[in-house]
Amino acid sequence: MTKSVKKPRIFFLLISVLFALIHYPVVATSKPPAKGTALPQFQLVVPDDSEAKGYLGLSGSGKFTVSEIDAPVVIIQIFSRY
Image (cartoon, rainbow, N blue to C red; front, top):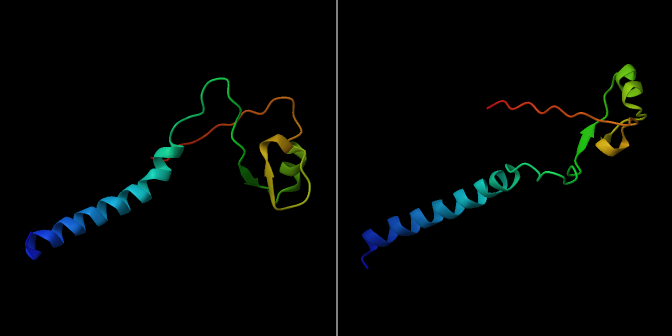
């Protein structure tokens, strides 16, 4: 193979690998949880407003998980900005 053909192939391969590495996490998290499975654990920031903290049954600052909310039922509404 000549140098003029080899360089574009290597460049294309490198770009393909980089795209796959960058795009993979997006694809992995784009699928919703299956019906009947538990909500994945993720952390949210504790609100600064004391009224909001009281409503959620939280105290302190930092981060919290959904399971720490003092309520019999938690409804989560997710907004998509695409």
